[in-house]
Image: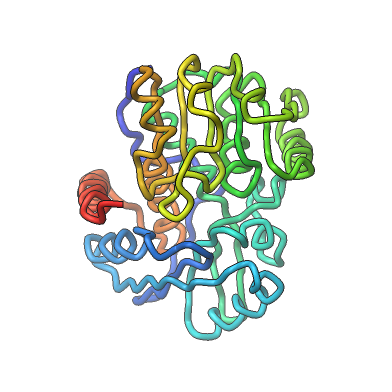
Length: 307
């Protein structure tokens, strides 16, 4: 699969809303976010676009899940205009009172929220749109084929929904919590009743004979080293996507490169979803020269961290 030209704009469920505000206070809520590039991306994007943007990291772990609604209300009252949401809050964010896009309504997963004075007003999934952008950037109109999905959490669900729209012919899901796999299957059937989804008994069973592999687990991150499946099972497939970008070159990505597989990195997803989130938050389109500048700068920052 040869890379195709970068699309000028990804397809979103909805066009971003334009705001009349002159300052944008944004943030990321979740756990394990200390290495996130989001503050650097959004604040630099703001400077390039001539906007006053502040982006904060707001670390919260699973013990705060019951308090997410209250936290979002407090952040809205404090002047936050938009939030990115990551683990372990994506499912809860998708089930809130904010108006959902169709993909959020179908999957129950959101990672981008617009806030008004009283709390969230709109819920988006920019993992979904960001992965769609990354796929088309690398593979153009090529179809995904049969896909093995490791991990049916927030990013795995969003990626699977995007793959349905991209023409995936079948999905094999493995998650350590089987009910999450069945929940994902039901969600995908709301998007396309004809999509074939099966629940695998192991990661090895999922990837055997698949055309592509998706890692939607945190295994491989800087704080959770390793691989979600035995690396000997990777190499016969055509392509691999690892949602992790800290580091970019996870064991799965290294194995895929060594065996000649086409790859989409977690950085690709991060970058595509960040562009979409910025445009949703601010209502300002990022022109191609700005996108190129941002990509170059973010890659330099990621390499400098040496994760």
